[in-house]
Image 1 (cartoon, helix red, strand yellow):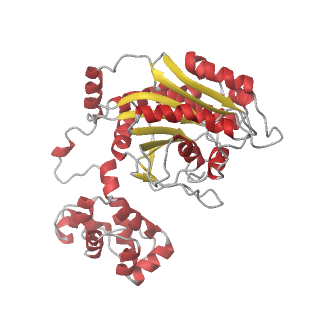
Image 2 (cartoon, rainbow, N blue to C red):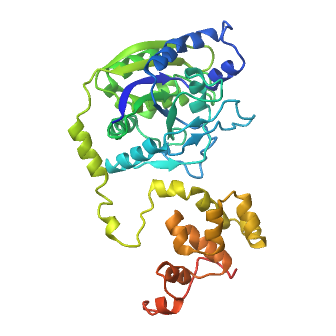
Image 3 (tube, rainbow, N blue to C red):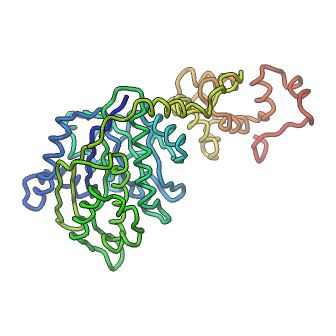
Length: 420
């Protein structure tokens, strides 16, 4: 099973990445930052975790307010650096452990901790700024895979400090119940004290930063009791993002051993690093086995329903490219391109030969078997003038006439607002 070998805390200010890219390692203003990361890098080199679960917040780069969620887990197998406005940093993409990600999502949902998922989104400085100084990547490869957890802390209401801690506790079970033999380290990013907007811009509080780190180690319950306003008063409004560190702390044992801790305030943000290891015994194997069984309860028996295909994260990953292509037909421009030449449109979208063949033949049942979700098939049908009832009949291997005999009313319809 997977094992949590420890955790890292790190600020994620973009100045860390800037200083690295500008080769400021020996500059007196920046050197204390890099010196503070030396023990963290040494710990990573010694422990060599297979996976880092990184808790971060996006800075309105890949996640905008048209759909803003409190907790969103990456389930991709690769993550690239997001362009934040001035061009993306020259940092290679990093691999994701999609299997562990999907397991975590199912485990959290089993524990009634609702969570969103994301694919095909870049990670901004919230993730890559600390990553780039923690791990070697000069040859274009990284020594670990990641599971990124994006926390929405910029648009209120946001999760409470206690909710973050409880998520960490659920994450511990999720990780340790993964059956594959993996070593996992958590990385909590953000903070410490800072404010980057309004007349209070530039606020810092090193005294609170030290107190926060003391409490994080020895008394996280005290931090869980605090409100967002109290965090903002002590550490600045943007500094309230340190509640993300409680996710990491919740995933550790009640007592932890702090192997390293540093703090430096060069300009706008208190920059801190820390390394923690558990002091608890190995997790209970019987409990974890029971948890894995409970994870399967909700769909247990569904395999008996012939012709039924629950749309799981695995099926979603298989059909992602195809579903994305068909979903794009909600845009008038994409519809026009498709109707002007299907083959050219599918080739431009880099659909595989199998995917193109399924679409070309309107093999509705084959598309479902492949990994398409029905609701993008509706869109293809609407664009091409096919009714929903034609799709339903095809799913059952029947003619439209025979299928209609099984309905109470002899009607056809589609989601199209007007004829194709």
